[in-house]
Length: 269
Image (cartoon, rainbow, N blue to C red; front, side, top):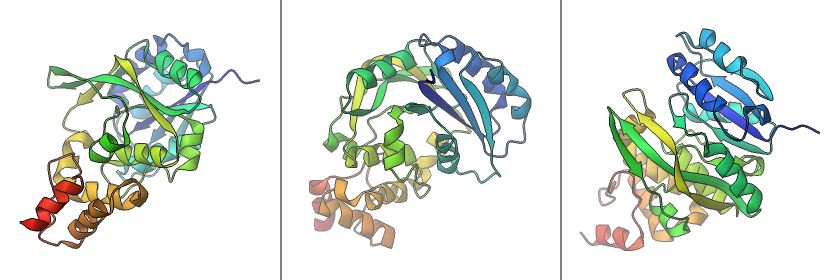
């Protein structure tokens, strides 16, 4: 029987310079890299990424493969391609420039193994931008909070069944990770926050995290439209109106979807 427990999917485009550091982080995982398969989904990189893959290939992992794609600049598509190639019972999409602490994978795997009704496990994380590090303390899961904002971390560990039951990461929203977590909730997979800080998410000029706010309103409206059963009818009306360009539909605060009362206030203006 295979000992592979975790599929680590690394979506990559021109992040070759980060791969040696990532390889070191994976080596230090207390769960043991020998029970993890590594899948690099490469979006047609033109930098030194292919040469730097040797740092991952040389790890004593349970398996290593590269999924080479023609470049589209669509991170959702890249993640999906990697997850479709995954074979382990647990999977995670890990950005090449992020830094998981040694306890990260072990803590998330233990959560899923101890809680069979949980489909996604995530931890608090550090947001690092230009040398400024800020701890992002995440609340425990609630459907109401997830309907307002993304309360999960950038790299939740999932059961494979969560991906198989979903439409995958959807390309019509810059908030594709938020959308994916909502899909999990709609499909009755529990989400659980591990009360520890085991992850560092790097913010810099090449991150989608920085460009997403420019299209914030449409991105949020598409999250609502993608998951109509998760949101109140008034919120669905707001999303439709915003996408149709109706003037009353305010994009609202960046990264936040309005609730029903907030939509009613917009209509009364």
